[in-house]
Length: 229
Image (cartoon, rainbow, N blue to C red; front, side, top):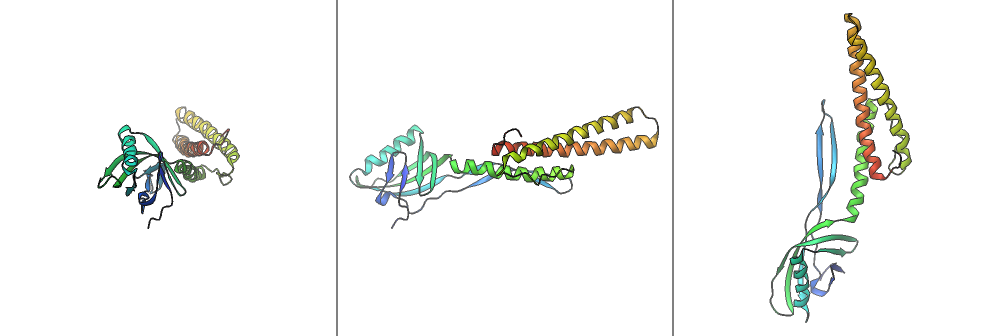
């Protein structure tokens, strides 16, 4: 006995033996892994990658051949079709329709579908990416002496002061770097030169960390629709 109560593909609502015993689907997550000096790691999620959806059944009844023909026409045309069952909904293209015609009223079939869009995963991917970006931003901001503990995905307005704080640090570090560079260029004393080099290195590291935090936080803000961040 089939376990799926209702499966709809395009204009065809599967019924009786047409309803598959099981539907195989799933997917992965595309990742970009950045290995940092010192053993750290930053991972960017690039979005969900859906696997193909597969299922099979038997078209039966006096219109069995006609119903399977309608799917074959959609396959040949490469049409994007809505697919839904239970709480799941996708837009798919028929990559392969395998038909084993036995009798006009008994036509076993197997379908392989390519996912064009999964509306649920699109939203989920944005939220997950925002969370990972905030985590990365917190790490870089901490190295720059800035706390992002008040930033929350559920409170988009919290991004605004955080971005402003990072911008202030970036500006301050830039000023320090300019001053250190000027001191280094116009000083002939060794000790003062060493101090200027150390100051420039510190300001450069501070600015780099703040810029990295600002970039991750900016992308997170865009994914959650934070205005003004």
